[in-house]
Length: 235
Ligand code: 5RP
Image 1 (cartoon, protein in one colour):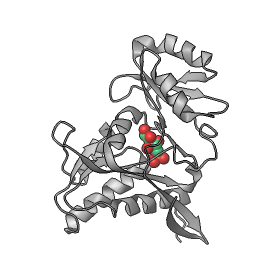
Image 2 (cartoon, protein in one colour):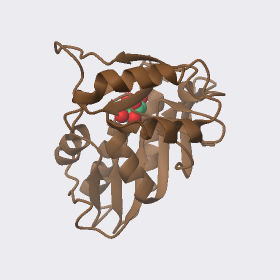
Image 3 (cartoon, helix red, strand yellow):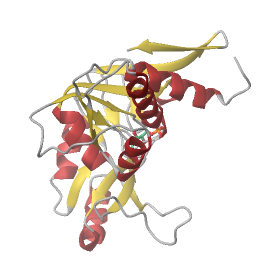
Image 4 (cartoon, rainbow, N blue to C red):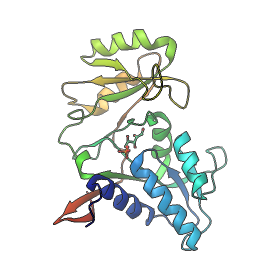
């Protein structure tokens, strides 16, 4: 192995492995994040080489749109298609039941729409994302309409969470999602019932969606380093 950053290597390998599963003629959900970026690049490479033909991508974010255009992947919308064959997307945490926390890139609302519609939703992560229990390493992102942010944060506290408004990096003020909303990241001491918490939070008026993805992942591909070599395994 080279002296490259091992996390980057794991992300690249797992992204490429997911891209290799895309078949000609498919409608492909294009996820968001640094791992999916490698998958989008690899899909573009396969199209360019002629190994893959006649696919269309449905992007989950502005980032995915930009990358798809850069790598020559034709795009479509949910209004134009009657199916998504495969969606490839990253995650911030994956538990043993393949439930996820997503939203590190503030794109979970659109990601959930696309990933949930896919016949096969393939999650791509490096091994550092595997946890025994959701919420152990990552805060739970919640997308909120700006005018409702204060009451929503109060309600999240009542549910036992510690909410904080996500602030921008290299941008003064809060992060604004692709839909023009705000992101509240919530620390829960323990997420014992992800399915119930997902529904309870989404029931708060003003919440668009939260980053719990329960029962959606069909395949989880994990990039790992074993004996100094990058490997990809399926869990
Ligand atoms: C964006 C997401 C990403 O898929 C998640 O944050 C993982 O990102 P990365 O692959 O960069 O670690 O949910 O909203």
